[in-house]
Length: 100
Length: 303
Image 1 (spheres, rainbow over the protein chains, first blue to last red):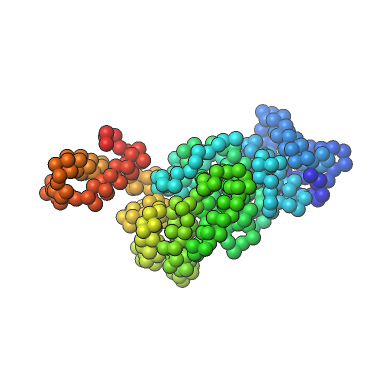
Image 2: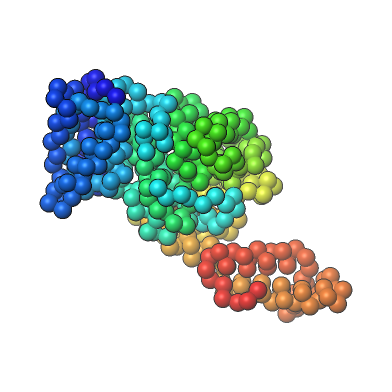
């Protein structure tokens, strides 16, 4: 999927993560902040990158502000931000396809 | 991936607790409270511009969080919104046990949702007929059509009244006695029992009024409801306690069932136990009490 416009999903509440995606120029540029950076920073980064790869996003600027979200929450927020960016987040989502 | 077992149409549902599907902090450990059913909400709790995000969050919660024996039902947006079709798709794809139809007003409403549920079951390779339905009656029309709604589908597990919207449409406020929605509760109960499905009362929203909450739970139990919708974990324990049979009720039920087994072998249909006439309807009720006691985990006998 192509990141066409800036889009955001998630909140700054505890156990949530806020993900912002913008059109990029040189692959994936990820900026990550997390309340549990020392323990889980690399795991979070991997989840974000794996999810983007699954969605076929190869170029984007991505900002992630994590408040201790579970893996499944991170995936949900990244997917929602990407679908919002493409303007197709409201219906006919490929549940169980690229969204999993 | 956590595969959920096939939902049971008839099971213990004393408590159904609402949780905003958009808030990960709430839904990630909802099962620890010991509630019978959780109700992940895509409707009123979710702001209009977050409906899409709530679905992504719901899908992953359904797929990756192990809710154990807790039933997982999803409240979808009403048929008068642009959201309900995608809500149905995500519920079925995620493997929710059931769908709660908000603002249901007719059997046609139920059948319309059912069509989309079936289509989604086919689309996502989910066993056909797996996903259960329940209807929330929130208007005079919904209450007056309770009979046809209760009988509209083999997937229907129960009906619930939604007090906030119903009271608004009747121009009344919450009364201590429940007089303002007494007729609606009663009509809905009759319709549910006629159809052989379950019936649930509305939420009690004044969280600090413990005495009022207890009075309403006791009223619900006395009226014959199967359970109640809740908005806070601290409301669970009192409902479970009130809806479980007492030791005395269990002892009497055991006595009836045992004496019936003996008497019927001897060809006797009606007889007395401790000076009280007993016949078949008493026995059926006694069996129901024992089944309920078992489900509530308070039965220790050998029947």
